[in-house]
Image 1 (tube, one colour):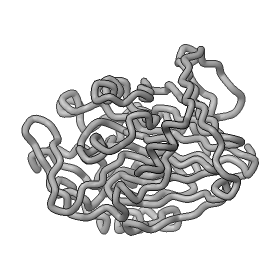
Image 2 (tube, rainbow, N blue to C red):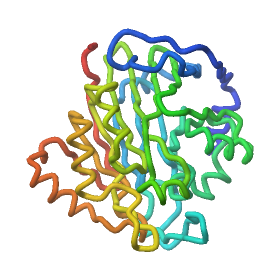
Image 3 (cartoon, rainbow, N blue to C red):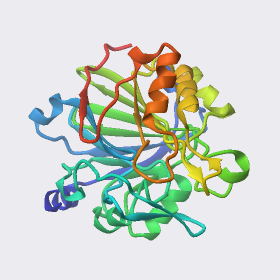
Image 4 (cartoon, rainbow, N blue to C red):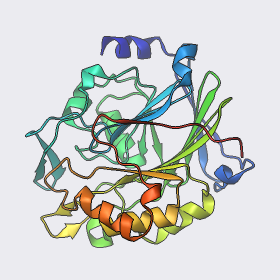
Length: 315
């Protein structure tokens, strides 16, 4: 990770709070009162700007590459047999290994954390991630990360956004509604957010929805109204059960419901077999997708596999 540390030490990262404004196009349907944060990252080498891909590492951990920008989602690099703490004395044992180890990561421009559970930001990551790495998360999680010593944390409320610029590539990260289970239980769990990632470069545009550990509930209906034309959806599945009773992440049926609601060009399921609290296997989702007639919309990645895509033409 020496290259990652030195990379961030040489960065001059500017995080400014400015007033939000409404831009033209579907991606700009934000409340005018929402604050806008900006993050400027020095441009990388031209050769690195050609790749546009998604690499699934495991759990909800994904490497997104677009036009020289590299985004890491919900970093979880514990190994099979290790445990995470979920709060209230609850733990869960990892059933798989990450496709790559933390030390083998490429230089990371931005980390996206949907919520602060250890299967999304584990103890190893808390210890080893460079403290100057930019992190986007919920406002409550941002406060806790700052207490851990992270210095470039941006906490977003629902519909608030961050504009990232690196050379000729931009990324707009907007916080989407999320709820970690039914209301009586969700109130006891960390606040969670989904994310809409709007990438843009000379090559075109690409819109990615990352669901986060949410269930499908009323506020989710607003997402396709504000953000139509999703190119790719990364869906957190698994049907996670607390105490083996209460479901707090999407199972197969909820996943299909979300797929129909967001209506992406392509969907990739993640977060489905890595911990013993995940009770809805991927095979259930595959059957439900087939039954719904949506099999042509879904790509399944094994841990470590990469899916490459082409940017869409400008809208």
